[in-house]
Length: 118
Image 1: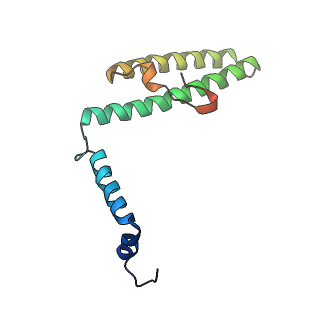
Image 2: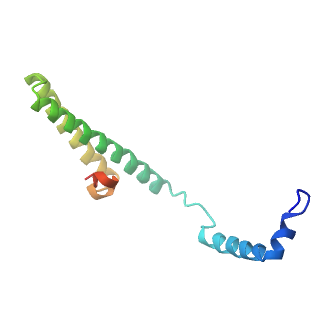
Image 3: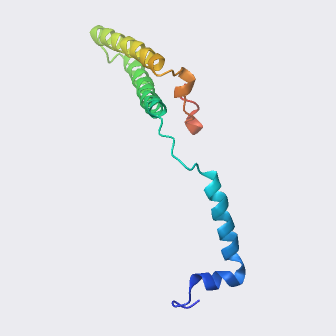
């Protein structure tokens, strides 16, 4: 193919143009004509994402706190503060899940070789 030869002329000879046109028509049917911009679903999806990230961070922080506690690196006061913080976070997470109609399974992520988040 030379730089000046039209691409459709080259493709037409091999039958690729018809095949590509057929694929484009099929692809057009696969996508909705309109974007679903339901504010409630967008809000719930965003809440799900944010709460999933908060849950992931909470679990990581709890594991770190347990390691520090087992290693004797925390004072009694720090242990009390961590316990209270995790209890408040858990309570607030439950409130937010209820507010957005989410359950624990909605926040679960497949972390590949690490397993599921929840």
